[in-house]
Image: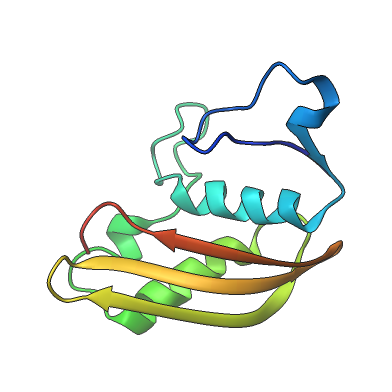
Length: 121
């Protein structure tokens, strides 16, 4: 699996040739899972059915268990994903931000993900 690295600001990394890519590493699968999760359903013009169903399973009247299930289902669909080693999430009642931390096993080894939604739930 080859996956382009992101800069700390979230842009594609360019200018360093092959060093701009993860190749057959747990980080490649981790970044793929993270970017897949952050894509909203209907946001990608080439396939409006692709993306995380935030409006249909996380934001609004949905429970934390619904949000966790939606999140885990999206991560499970990532190429190279094997299983969850750990998964913890929370919804901050003040800011209504859903965040999660997980360690996943991939076909290349373990990697950790940490994501906080910028949009309220």
